[in-house]
Image (tube, rainbow, N blue to C red; front, top):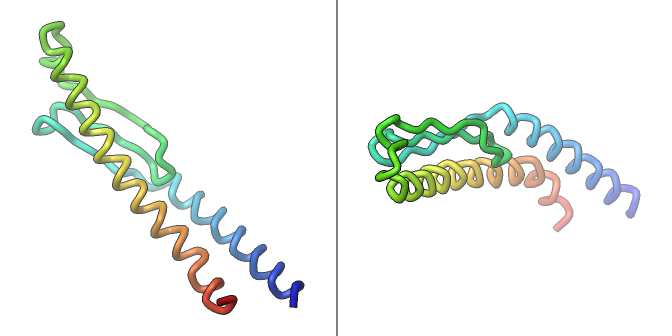
Length: 100
């Protein structure tokens, strides 16, 4: 009984590892300010790039830049979180069904 359980847990760990590797190759983007800020993250929620329109680099746009950056980051990270959850459910879902 425990051998079978241990085997299933090992399989789940392997599938989750594979899922994380796939997610590292997925790029999700968040934008704000009609594209003035663009943020790219991978499926593991690691920020990969940030693009800022030159007009926002002026000192008088500091507050706007900060607000738009937060919005774009949160959008990209939300999409990444959804992708991560779906991948992990997929990795573990079929295996756990037999255990419950």
